[in-house]
Length: 110
Image (cartoon, rainbow, N blue to C red):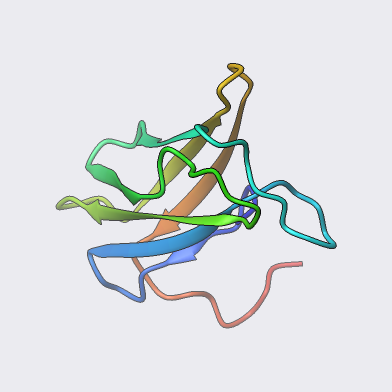
């Protein structure tokens, strides 16, 4: 999961996804520190988001997995979900994920 990676529901009014809770090491997914908390929020009117599990991060030598679900209210067709990670020392990082109630375009934009 990276910033600006859009998730499409295929026309469904809701969606779910799971993601690794790890650093950005491209060789090996290193786990976040034990006790790291995860929060999923949105400021989009008509969009609700729920963290389904994975917080706090357990003490482990492997990257853990978290998940979230989201629902579009009547008239809402897109929105932005922010997933924030806060380590026990207070360091925070976040990822913004656009979500769309629709199908993925068949042609990539230049």
